[in-house]
Every structure is written in structure tokens, then in C-alpha cells.
Image (tube, rainbow, N blue to C red; front, side):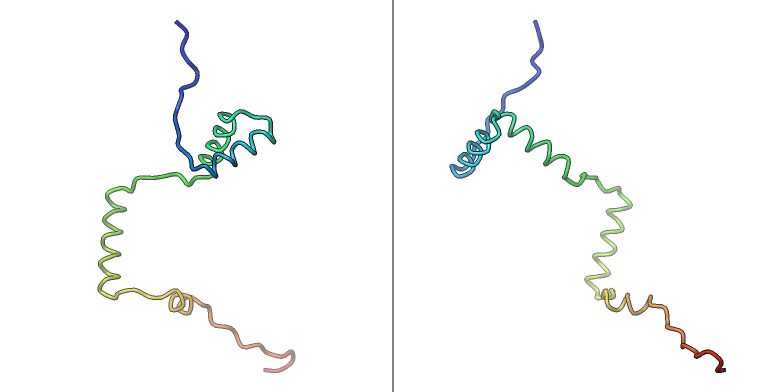
Length: 96
């Protein structure tokens, strides 16, 4: 008995979206299935990968949130000022 290469999935969409699907499907001479497969391929390709944080990551987040709650943080402006390198004085040629 041959194996199926596709499975059927039922999806409910609002009427406006159905109209869009039909319009694009006709313009591109594609089936609804082809259109939905392409949309899902693009979605999966552009989606940021989901990673499960490690125990160490979760502990670091917990500590950081606790420090933030106690008011122990610096703003981005404060951090930027702290890491700026001081500008050197510009000397004119021939003067000392």
C-alpha cells in the first residue's frame, strides 16, 4: 500500500481572508494548497528560532529581575556615558 505524501488539514479563516486567498490564487494560477504551503514556508523561514533556556540562563534571568526590582540597574544613557572614551585635546601644529 503506497504511503501518502501529503496530509489534509482544515483551517478556518475569516471571510475577508478567504477573499484575499481566492484573489491571489486566481492571479497566480495556483491552488489554495500551493498558496498556503508557500505562505507557511515563508513564515517558517523568517521566524526566529525558539530556544529553551538552560538552567543557568533561567537563574541569571531570575537574579537580574530581582536586582531590577530592587532598583539595581543603570539606564542606557548612564551606560553609554560610562563607556565613552574621553576626547583628547587637539593641539595645533608647532605649539606645545
